[in-house]
Image (cartoon, rainbow, N blue to C red; front, side, top):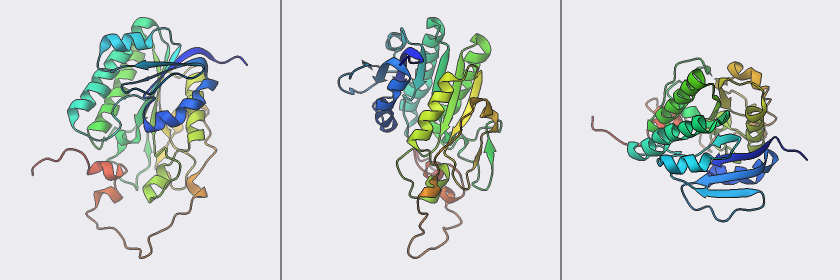
Length: 269
């Protein structure tokens, strides 16, 4: 069977989501080049493995050589001190897009995050045209990535789909996870649509399944023709044995970023 691409690059292959996606990406290309800063073991059939520090421009250039499209899931994926986020998510994005531009790569799918909008209240309906409201350094780095990719589209015509990915784990357990859940199958279909839609320009889409009570409105990415097949409604939404309303001062319960709004570096008052 003819595949859409000869070779695609998948960064962040050693991460939690990367390990789950790895075996499914062969449907997109004859060769899947897997990259991570850590050792992810030997290549399997139809794979190439590259160890790369995103903060190293020369390593990134070599990592990107000879690929037709990029799925960029690499970088720091949690709220930590700023320095490692700056190296991987900010400097690393500059290095990646410089390589994409110089090598003539036409399409990038960027794993952004719902934490770009984490300071909106859970009672609000959010869409991609609304101002970003990041909930920490990690979310801010993803805002940077979205803006950098938009610059490369406006200036150089490099197309990018930014996916504001929700809770992509096998099964949700909390109310927030139920609302923001994204099944692996729905993510794979969203990647397929992001890679194969003929024209995307610069698109921001929310990576979320067809869940009850969802907070995110995706009408700005309708041209991707993505239709979620799964829903968190299949999972029981069980309250604790002795249900109690949360403390009114608990930011994690009424801001969309959840625990991210209170984690990470602490500052004196």
